[in-house]
Image (cartoon, rainbow, N blue to C red; front, side, top):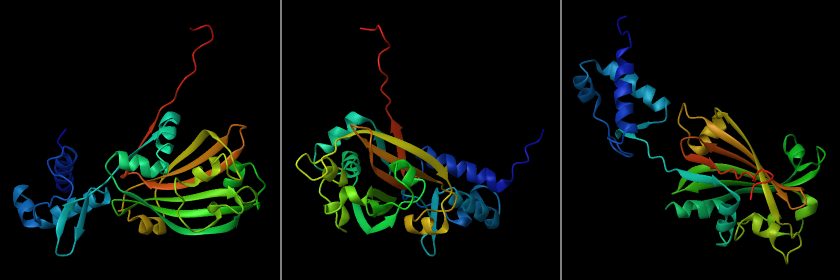
Length: 261
C-alpha cells in the first residue's frame, strides 16, 4: 500500500525526532520557514502546519520576531517513598523544595491565599468529615527556576490547626508538615502514611493560563492524603501538575511473606 502520510506530518515527525533525540536542545532555534520549506521540498504553508502540530504537542514555542524554539521544560522527579520523605524532612526544608534542590533546581512556594472554606467532596470524604465542616485552605503556586510548576491547595480541619502558623498567609519553615509533626507543638501528630489518587486530564483555560501550559499538554491532578499513626487523615493536598514538567516515581515496599526469614 502506498504511504499517504500528509507532508506536514512527515516534517513534524522528523523535527520531533530531532527534539526527542537531543539533536535540537531546549532553547534551540529551528530553521526559518523558508529554510525548512527548502529542506523538505515543500511550501511554507505546509511547514507552518507542521510547526502548529509541534506547538500543540508542547514541544516548541513561537513568538513574533523571535522565531520558533524548542521549549525549555525543567522537570522535577517526585519520588514517592517513605524513607525518601523522612530524609528530605530531616533537612528542615519542605519536601518539594528539597527534592528540587537535590536535582539542581530552584523551587519557590508562593502563597496565593489562606482562607476558611466549607469542606466539599471529595476533600470532605478524604478527611473523613461531614460536607460543610470548616477547613483551612492554603492555596499555593510552586515555581521551578522561576517557571510555574504546580498549583497546590492544602486542606486542614480548622479545629485541628486553629491558632497555628498553618492558618496564616505566610510561608512556613520546613513546610506545613513541620507544624503538624512538631512534638512540642499543639498538634503533635506523626505522619505515618500517604495515599495518592492520580487523575490525568486536559486543563481548563484558567489552569492553562495560571501554569503557562501550551495547547495539547495534559495535567495530573494528585489528591494526596496524609494519615497519622492512628490512621486519622490530617491533611489533603490537591495538586495540579503539567505532565511535561514532572516525572512521578513510586517505590512500593512489600512485606516479607509469612515464614520467610
